Length: 221
Length: 225
Image (cartoon, chains in turn yellow, red):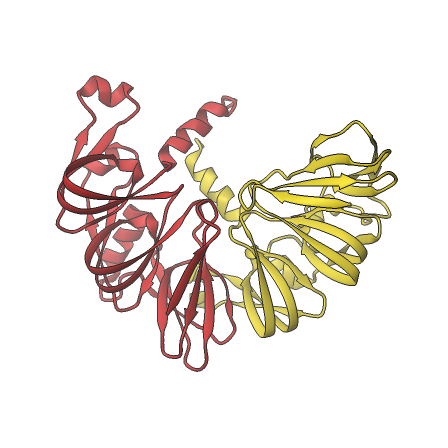
């Protein structure tokens, strides 16, 4: 499978070129265009995005689409609802943790399971479930705004709403951005994740929540 | 202090590298990520200004009442900053005074002085709160815009839609006016304009928040009573 990322970072689109028999699983509704030589099967998330109620908890649809190329050079274009970026990672018996709504597509060798992020992600209000991707193959994930890779060596702080993904060997804890209750409320920064260890993480340059509250203010009540 | 801006113009992010002892102040909520040795201090937007005046700025200007100062004592530290809206970030080195449309302020050197300047009721007619921060001194300033930022040197006069103004240099005079006669004011789609005269720079944004609001209202189904 070959891929091209186009129109980054604002209106990213990924174009896959697949050979006969190759498969890709995508978030429901992600297909923009496709050549006729695909077999498409819509599956309930079980076994793939396995937990019941994943829609509410992980920010993902309960359904996924599985595309199987029935001839060589089959072309499939994928994009997301929000304006933003798409990133690709080649997994090699590795594990990546994704923010609930960040999944776009993956090859069959990559397993995706929701994991409970714990109370810390509840307070972080970005959804209590994170997605854990592990295995070998291609993984595509998305953001609102641009995706920014960051190498962590030691420790690093990320605003909860800006987190997209991180490597499993990083540990994290939730903390207040600034000391004291008053400044937690007044600073406008709220809660942050503090990562430690050695590994890579990805952040997004905007937060959907911020965009939504801004839009809401423009609309008639 | 090293400041790089990436991912512009739609989803710009400012990457700020602080050396020991350096600091930058930013609008509340602007922090995206940072090194863990960076310290945050929360304070009023205009430090020496009374509580009441700060409140006025917050209520009328749509500006955050509080700001955060990021600093490092030992070692280097990175902070990334972004506004809420989709759009660009522009870095400018100022030496003198600029007036910044209050919601366009993202961050600046801590040695810059901040004051507020109320534009009077005229500004409210347009549905945009025309409220400016008066920023003076010698330092770096980061401004955010909805859309891209267009910089223009005025020598003579120039007319700008109030919804598109981001900032202008001191030394430029301006008047807020209707666009044409009353008929144009209501039907031209232009509303209020600022007429600048003199010599100096202005910065404008390529999209207008009020217009987006109007467009969204038209696109939405009518409200059920």
